[in-house]
Image (cartoon, rainbow, N blue to C red; front, side, top):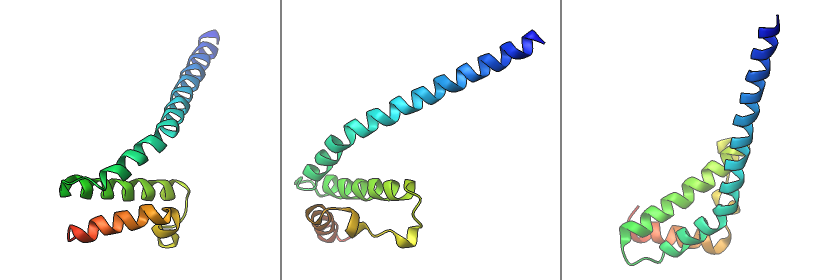
Length: 100
């Protein structure tokens, strides 16, 4: 019977370590997200059209991932409400210039 308790303890310990690692990863992502978004916004002004286009797509993907994780149905999400006005305008301008 002692080996069953030991296995349960080991399993619980591993689950706690996994959860702790997951929380640390989420914290790191949350801390680096503003800098990453700022960099993508800077790349919208890049003279290479492909770089600007990819930055726009990545910003849209980030926004979609964020709204999806907040458990909102896809038909109720509105990107224009989530992006600040300037960022949304820049993304749309770059995509329009690139013929997307």
